[in-house]
Each structure stands twice: as C-alpha cells, then as structure tokens.
Length: 373
Image 1 (cartoon, one colour):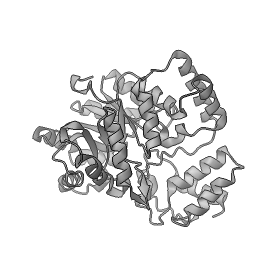
Image 2 (cartoon, one colour):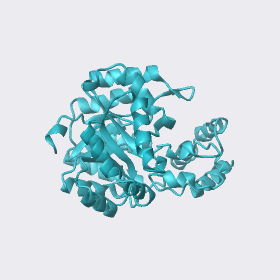
Image 3 (cartoon, one colour):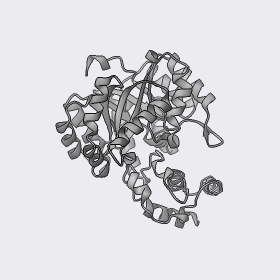
Image 4 (tube, helix red, strand yellow):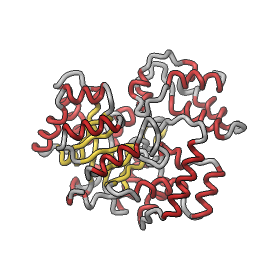
C-alpha cells in the first residue's frame, strides 16, 4: 500500500443513508454524528452526486466543510456515468459537485459504479480516466479511482488498461464472498494480488448483516456476548489484508457509537471466529432473501414513486418471520406515502441502475401477490 495511504482511517463515514426528518436530511443530527466521528480521530467522508437525491454533497458542506478546517478531513465523491450525455457534461457535473460541497478540491474522486455495459462504455467514450488524471495534475483531485459493481473479468481488463488508478472501491462482506452476481471474493483476490488499496462498501450489506434472525444472533452472542451482530461483519472485512478503509452508512448515533467501539481497539477475527462466520454464512444462504442493499438508486427515477427497497425489506422480513403482523402494518403505512408494489409499470428504469442486478420488475410482481396490493 502506498505510504500516503498508510494513515487512512479504518472506518469511513458513508453519507448515503443519513438521518432524515420529514423526508429531509436532518442536518443538526448529521452535525452531531460528524463531531463524534471526528472526535474519535477519524476523518474520511464518502458521498456521491446521486446520494439523497443530490442532497448528500450539500449535507457534507453544511455539516463538515463549513465547520472544520479543510485540511482536517478527507472528502470523496463520484462522477455518475448516467449523467454524462456529452464530453462537456463531465466538467459541468464536476463543477456542480465542487459548488455543492463548498470545496476547491476532492481528496478522493471516483468514477461511479463501473460495471459491464453502459457505465464503463460511457467512461471510455468520454475518456474519463484521462480527464481524472488531468484534474489530479490541476490539484482538483488528490487521488483518483473508481467504485466497482462488475465482473472479475472486466475488473482485470480495466486495471490492465488503467494502471494509473490508485484505489478501487468494492462491495465486500462475508455473505457476498461467493455470491454468483457480486463475486466479491474474486474481486478482492484480484485487487489484493495487484496490491491495489481497497475501499470497502456495504460491509453489513445495507443493514442485512446487522439484523439477524434470533437463532443466528444467538450464535454470535454465545461467543462474544457484549458485541453487536454488526461488529462481526465489520471485523470480518477489517481483518482482510489490503483493505484501506471500510465505509459504513451510519444513520444514527447508536450505529456510530457501535462502530466506533468496534474500531477503537480493533481485534482481527480469530480462527475460531472465522469458522463461526462460515457457519452463519451457510445458514443465511439457505434463507431465501432479496439481495437489496437499500442504496435507493432505483427510487429517484421511478415514475410511480415506489419505495422499492422498503418493499423488499418487508418481503425479506416476512420470509424470515412469516407470522409477524408488523411487516404488513409497516407496508400499509409505507403505501400512504409512496407507490404500491402493484403500481409498477415495468418501465425497467430501476433494473438499469441496480448495482445488484436484481430482477426488480418480477420481484415487485411477487411482492404485490404476497402483500395483496
């Protein structure tokens, strides 16, 4: 790992799932969380053009940039391929991001969500890798890389074509190691072999690995009764060589406190604990679950206003706890403020942007049958 990356904080603050009040980011709450995170000696913040409908970068400005010296923190954001319709759009989006965040430069800048097909083709078409290196020369970007949701084969191709890339951000957690779509174990192996620093996203898989069935939670508690279920997922990723920073999209101070506790005196997994993780993985893979990470990329462009991740969360909960009446109560409240699963018109917008490549249209049909509306 490059010497300049050696002091990177192990825990990064992801700004994709910030606390909200009346459907608007609760800046006062975010400020408290930022203060607690910075007071712990941590300083890496990750946002993106599309997070919170374009408001996450603004939240970073209000809660962080305006309140702390610029050299006291590192801010990362991303260039969205789906907003690029001409070469001039690159500068347009980038300048908008600088303005939103209230900064003169970004410490880390990523091409967002490289994957097989449209996104990578767009970045190649407009020579975004060359553009990124030019911005680095100008001092507008300190470090240049990309986030990745594609195949291992494409990752090898991209890295061969662009050795200038300084780091790569991938989805990595113990459940996705052998996921035939995500294939995160293979992605990790490629990057580790090439000694490319890794930033990890979705270490708790959108909260899935923090909220377990009681039988699985009991397995963890038997070995470490004072530790949260989420801490096991974070310790798994933090125990891997070559992982530079682990992003957690913390939504409240309780999550922040728990994560800080995990990393304050970080303990790598023991051999016995790894065996337990393997047993838990086997049990979880035996449960039929929709692999949604609640990134909400599907929501902004949905013409029917369906809160797709919340629909899937309802279905996943019903699959685990079929007799729990609260799930259907939750859904009844949800459709008072958003579209129903049955409202889907099968336009395909959601499937085009889903990083998990989920068959969302079919899943919503299934959900409408299960939920009856």
